[in-house]
Length: 80
Ligand SMILES: [Zn+2]
Image (cartoon, rainbow, N blue to C red; front, side, top):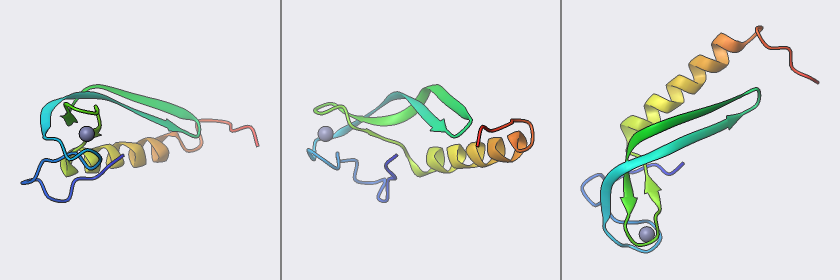
C-alpha cells in the first residue's frame, strides 16, 4: 500500500505519468481473515496501472483492520 504525501502533485511514483481518479479493489490478507474492499476510490496511473490511495483511505483502512483484529481476538482458534 502506497501512501500519498503531496496531494497537489498527482504523479505516478514509478513512471511519473499523471494519475487519474478511479477505483480499485483493496485486498488485505491477514493472519486469520481476508478483507476485500471493492470500488475503493483511488488514483490510478493511466500508463502503468499503479494505484495510489489517498491518506484518508489509508487511515480508514488501517482503523478497520485494527478494529477487526480486536473484535476477532478470542473468536478464532488459531492453529499454532
Ligand atoms: Zn505509472
